[in-house]
Figure 1: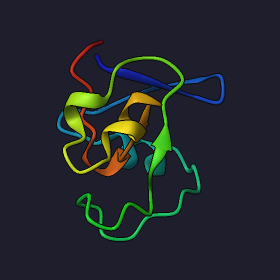
Figure 2 (figure 1 turned 45 degrees about the vertical axis):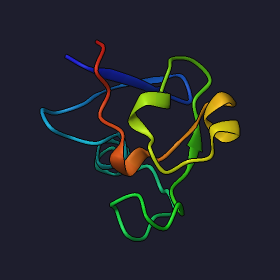
Figure 3 (figure 1 turned 135 degrees about the vertical axis):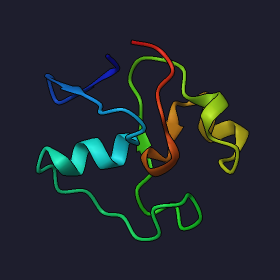
Figure 4 (figure 1 turned 180 degrees about the vertical axis):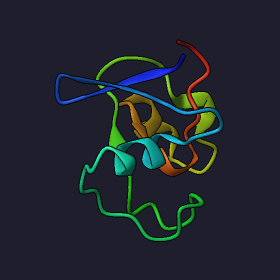
Length: 78
């Protein structure tokens, strides 16, 4: 099962669930709008892990700092 960590809490993602969907399902209040990667309203910064490959529309300099769009982020690892 795929997991993410949000403020010391481990959250298990359901099959085919984006990071944004998992966070919202847990009642975490995040800003978002389009849910498809266009508006960048939901952008977050990862403290661990590599999210660069899943983020085609973010500037390379932002990717290098760990920024990603949780609405289109579907973790590949466990």
